[in-house]
Amino acid sequence: MSDIPLLKVSALSKFYGSRIGCQNVSFELWPGEVLAVVGESGSGKTTLLDCLATRLAPSTGSVEYRMRDGQFRDLYRMSEAERRFLMRTDWGFVHQNPADGLRMTVSAGANVGERLMAVGDRHYGKIRATATDWLGRVEIAADRIDDQPRAFSGGMRQRLQIARNLVTNPRLVFMDEPTGGLDVSVQARLLDLLRGLVSDLGLAAIVVTHDLAVARLLSHRMMVMKDGHIVETGLTDRVLDDPQAAYTQLLVSSILQV
Amino acid sequence: MTELATYNFAYLDEQTKRMIRRAILKAIAIPGYQVPFASREMPMPYGWGTGGVQVTAAVIGPNDTLKVIDQGADDTTNAVSIRAFFQKVSNVRVTTKTTEATIIQTRHRIPETALQAGQTLVYQVPIPEPLRFLEPRETETRKMHALEEYGLMHVKLYEDIARHGRIATTYAYPVKVEGRYVMDPSPTPKFDNPKMHQSPALQLFGAGREKRIYAIPPYTEVVSLDFEDHPFEIQTFSEPCALCGAKGSYLDEVILDDKGGSMFVCSDTDFCEDRQAEGHRGHLSANPAEAAE
Image (tube, rainbow over the protein chains, first blue to last red):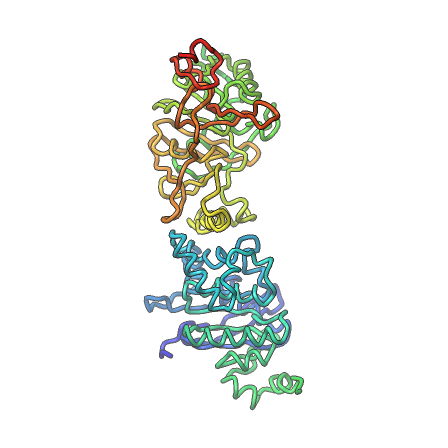
């Protein structure tokens, strides 16, 4: 891990009229670090994620990102063209519902290849070879490359979505409940896969989840949100084993022990 | 004709023509860019060429000679009725000869005879947006054009190759104009795409229902999209035209009987008739005496 952060967020707030989406959020994210944002429904996790991923303009505050040339740029002072370019090259966004992140009517190969074609790759054979390679890495059989995601199971779709995002070797991936809606055994495989990919590729990731087990397995650090505010941050193991804030203690103790 | 007679000439009123001409000028200034315009109701249904008719009516003058083709033919319903329409409302000379025409309104084909400087080709366009069936949101496609995000267009071509082993798109084949805008060349066969490149003629595209005008000025670069290892190819035909014996022209298959018999003839009727007048014969030519030669 390097000494210079990849993402600097300062005093970020988002208001929906008089209601608070998230308020006064500041943190830094380092390269290769996985940060989990946990909290109950309506606590502002997704609002925060959308503000970071430039999917939703924040009301106040700034988000700075270190570009590949080492310069920090304020995301909301960039031109839209630059932002969109960043989103499809240096970033990934894994949606909770794979249908939101995939093109359901084109084949798996084209789904993975889309980003490559968007950055100017014009060699069919190479695009296909890269797509095949990535399908292998997310454990999708190579003979499914010409099938549409509609023919895939939920777990496969989610893995395909991950492959589609990682094909351009991004440095930062946003994940919104990546294991939501999957059954427990499929979740376990997906988490295992994600953990492997994140450490192999040295990805930084921000994972929004309400599932503390996901946070425990995937993340190095976590932030606990409540009513749009951050109530506690710290190393994942510390927060889960020795929660300081009253709300975190409640959250941790509410996990069903089996 | 007196000056008064050209006032409100060719069906449209002066204000409408002015509005359309401004859209056309803007379209010529930004090759391949879809310029919105306030398309008018025309005395024909949408899909019959209301966009092309408005463009033609806005650029035509008393000294023009008009040719109208539909699928390459001068004698099909759409061509005949639009030609009759302009004869009635503007009283211009009409022709079926490509070389004599100054304005050619077309649906689905570019004439086989190479166009000359000074000629204007007006296309009737049903769907001007090349990204329409790939990205349903019009706001998003406009943004994609603005930011030159055309990766999606290649996703379609990728799908073609993955499914059919080659690029199976045969008409409305997307082109890049002057290295900037990706454009739908209207439903012309891809056979005609190379004719758009560096054409000396002005090419105007009118989409009436969709309210868009776009243009390719003379001598503009028009490149069909493809992959490095699957280059763009035009259709080829295994046999020559059955009437004029032409090789290398675009052919229509005409069913002859209900036993599977068919013939291939030039889709460009003017081109085919010219060749027959010059004495070229195919194997199904009408005149047996000359065919026997």
